[in-house]
Image (cartoon, rainbow, N blue to C red; front, side, top):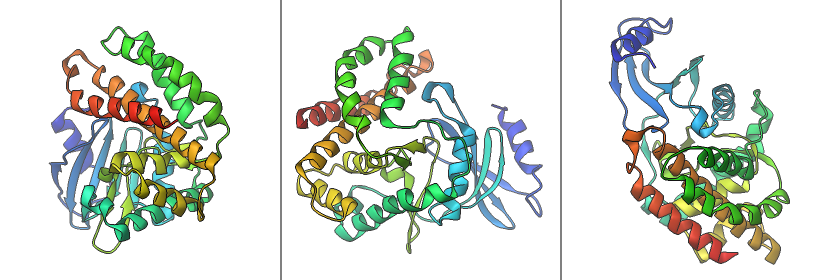
Length: 292
């Protein structure tokens, strides 16, 4: 990644601006670096790619998914793209928190957003069609973690039997396009509508994982989780569909846990940085496994 002065010069030299620009950092983005650009034309976000290999991120697929989301009106416009860099229009709004998911009206708006991803985005997507199913993602992490001499190797190996149990169950579930990273920080409310951002893990997979991730990350259980599944299906679920959703919730929790293991082990200086996140997801995996 370029040094800060070089990066600022690179951004200022892009043929997008009608004059000088202001650049300031944006919080968040563990696998990317985000900068807010203020120009005469408005405000934009520069998204500079970080590590790809640890999380098996295909940046060409990310750009294609971002374009498709914009074409569907689900995400902000992508105004510039080159290897390792995207410039998107900035959405003025706020990300969602726990109070939003406790609001039935807001929750149904989020569910409609996810429904639009699986219904509309495949027709607009023009990019690499890699396997981004939950099992493929988990297998990537399991292999990577088992080959790395870090403190998470034994932790990941403990989940191998559970991953084997998931394989046949996940294979039987419907395929389609999935965002694969649904949580409140990736959903923006501009006061009129909701936007879904950060498409770096998106691709051909199993859309039900998006609902499972929403339910897990929003802390929805019992009747609230049931309402989400009914909304997704358009009818009450069968016993088999309830079991399938429980399976997908486990897969989604394991994906988040393995992401944490991989992210925390990227460099020695990060060891322990994600301990709270990892502990939360280890608890979610245990709870999800108990539902099977």
